Image 1 (spheres, rainbow, N blue to C red):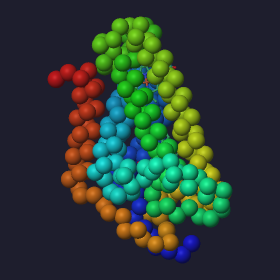
Image 2: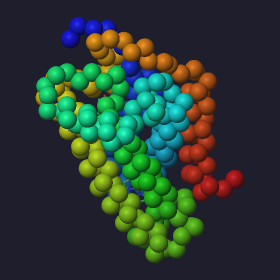
Image 3: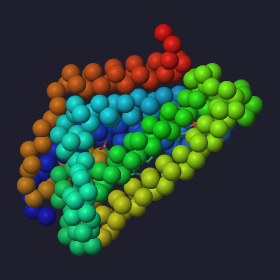
Image 4: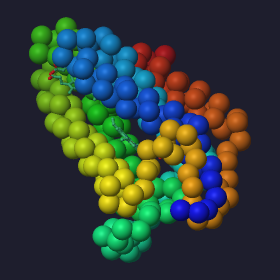
Length: 219
Ligand code: HEM
Ligand code: HEM
């Protein structure tokens, strides 16, 4: 496709994305027998989610929820174009993909939130907020923590299948832009960036929230 090379995904979006992938795999691996690491990985994911939500309001234009979260009409209209084999040209998440982005972030937040209250069978290992609930409730929450993980796995599977669909059916490589930040589009939409101080505020905010919760939400 002839067109312009556009700066699409800013650095923070890409770094958050690939860290999420690595840490989620690590959290999965460490959930059985390495619960100490499992908790640390969970706090890091918590920080990434907090940061991504902040960035969804304060980040570059393509990262903002306001620029990609659309209503049912736009979603239905976009869905009708899915069958066509023309290259996808949305300068950011398309209206349908936006649903998946929001769902993954929400389910991730629930996963971490439940993890904070989770208690292991023998009560030796637990999340930092588990002393606020009874052992039985902590065990119940552990079940939900596991159930919610299945939901997360399903969402990620759909996500990866969707990316594969774009690669195969629409001959559109979405992965490369998520690595390099750049994409060739018919025209440059001139997406606005975000000032540096917002990145710093976001990192500090995310670290503060993760640290505070990891300490059992006590000063
Ligand atoms: C643990 C697994 C994964 C999670 C939790 C995840 C989560 C996400 C999230 C939250 C976004 C939105 C990005 C943002 O706006 O900040 C996203 C986008 C994206 N992800 Fe993933 N992802 C995962 C795995 C993968 C894998 C394995 C690939 C590559 C094959 C991939 C490719 C992409 C691409 C290309 C986009 C941008 C889609 C677009 O152009 O609209 N993801 N992912
Ligand atoms: C997105 C991040 C997370 C993922 C994907 C995840 C995933 C899982 C999974 C699949 C299990 C079940 C292991 C099993 O018994 O088969 C588990 C157990 C557990 N998780 Fe997480 N978790 C996450 C975050 C957290 C956080 C933040 C904490 C606490 C700080 C936590 C604390 C625990 C504890 C204590 C268990 C043991 C519960 C039990 O053995 O029944 N998790 N996690």
